[in-house]
Amino acid sequence: MQIQLINPNTTAAMTEKMAMAARQVASPGTQILAVQSATGPASIESAVDEALALPGLLAQIKAGEAAGVDAHVIACFGDPGLRAAREMAAAPVIGIAEAAMQVACLVSASFSVVTTLGRTVPTAHRLLQDYGMTERCIRVRATGIAVLELEAQTGDLLRQKIGNECRQALAEDGVGAIVLGCAGMADLCTELTQELGVPVIDGVTAAVKLAEALVGLRIRTSKRGDYAWPPSSPISASWPSLLRHHDVPFSCRPTQPPKPPTPEGLYDEALNTPAHSDGFCHLCRHVSRRCRHVHLVLQPGCAVHGPAFHQQQLYQRLRQQHL
Ligand code: 2AL
Image (cartoon, rainbow, N blue to C red):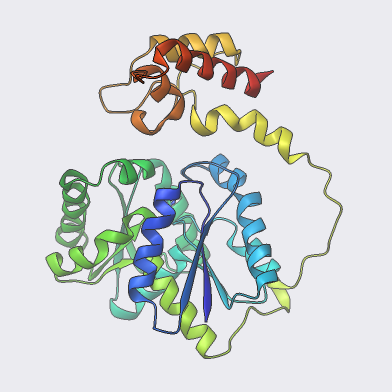
């Protein structure tokens, strides 16, 4: 059986991490085909991120269907594009948020979600409502950790922070299970389950096992009703121009206050502004050492090229994006 595991963001380290978690639970006959979107944001933490992730995600669904995979897993806790993907697929499509919530309900009367940034909490609430699980989830708790921080820092500090939030959920919410609210937390679930003595459920592994169950039962996506094949209407939107406009925010997202997007302005800002003490660069919400643009400026110590070369590269890239 082949399960296509799709990371709908474009961060390869995250794809590898979730693939490893998926392969650890997959049955011997199951092949995990881990892919990621070719276009889109490096992490999905807002409605705009989600919207811009969809073309890349749906392209992977289409490719997987053409290749004849047995099931698809959308590995982002916002379950982006789940309904659209189901319209496009005959194979089952499982979202990791729905999978984790369903599995939690099978082993506990109630659960709390421990997720990333506070701004993703309303998304989790919306999903709970969509899936009819509002009554079963006592609280959605944010750790204040950004998705890409989970990739940049694998140290004990983040694990401790997430572990502490889980412990607090058990102490304050009266729940019997915890759902981890990010695909980037997949590697923490076994350890936390052992540590806390309650089921700590990661959506990636839950989704893989649910996908195996559906394939084993020969249950596929219904093509009657909501998930019927979509009519093929002509698409007039110009995705490249939309994505071009968003290019800088992808990797160099202006936070405050927005400056006119001239290459000179961005270049000057990148050059003159150090990373904030919390590790986030001024131009984007990503941890500075994962931001290619600021990385070039802040750490230009390449012995071969020297700072001027890197600054020139940055300038040229900004020009390409804005002119
Ligand atoms: C996620 C996730 O799982 N992947 C991603 O890019 N964002 N979830 C989240 N709560 O921010």
